[in-house]
Length: 393
Ligand SMILES: Cc1ncc(COP(=O)(O)O)c(C=O)c1O
Image (cartoon, rainbow, N blue to C red; front, side):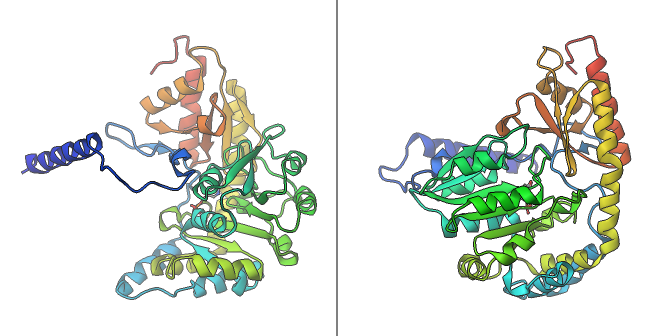
């Protein structure tokens, strides 16, 4: 029995290969820019072999979702034949009540990725430029290129977005600025006064997208996710997600807080039922479970600084982070490199995130996990750094 699917797979592979050898004489061609896109490569999530894995590669919460969200999700199983609410109204209302916002100006999406892409669809086209920062979240570049627009990279200072560098890249062709605050994978952030200065320096026709995927983790008084700036202006959007602190990454739920005209624009182009019923139900329950959110914030507060200190004591350098992950820099000496550390960790079934494509060939990003996961990663890294050998596993 088992041989049959294998044979079918082999047949399919052969057919695919044959198709590549003999392409059609005329074939559909993607629009300019599309084939310049390097597909987004998610963090490693599986390893060969068996046994539990310590996965600290995708900035997921070690606490998991609120049990109330899981219950609400399961409760939707009885209604799967019905389309969900087309504008995710219950979720927009819950978010509006929780954050003191106008529900009409909230647009929900299948993860904030969808909303970032929809903003690019609506506001970018060939000939337009969009700015993001040197180590900014990679989805921005993909969204810009997918529209045939031109990505413009603003250098960072000390691995942190630099307002003057962004403003100096604005031209008459600039249409958007994407800024993750805090940024992934650096974990650094700009205080609200800097965000205000950035906004004040942009022409009113340029859309400033404040991606606040990790906002809930930031405890610094000088930080704001951006809703107040959206409220007073027509060219600012804040995006948020349920994938990080709410522990609902698999359900794909994001939301954007927008000026009226931008909410209207997104509602014209989004899929009519772009957020599923189980996602809406789980999202509402998650928003209402304040205690679970507070526990996740407290857990991160306990472990973020502690883990950073311990990594430094091992001899590694850590970029100061306000999010739920740390960018860990390795020596360039053979035997101690990030690549070798990655292999060493994999052999111990621990996964951190490689970040070469973010401009960090000598770093790994570590998500804050449970106490046991953090200890396992620290112990393995300590062994790696103190090993006499080449570091090979
Ligand atoms: C800065 C940033 N923005 C957006 C996202 C996308 O989140 P979502 O799961 O909501 O699409 C991520 C996820 O890694 C992120 O790090």
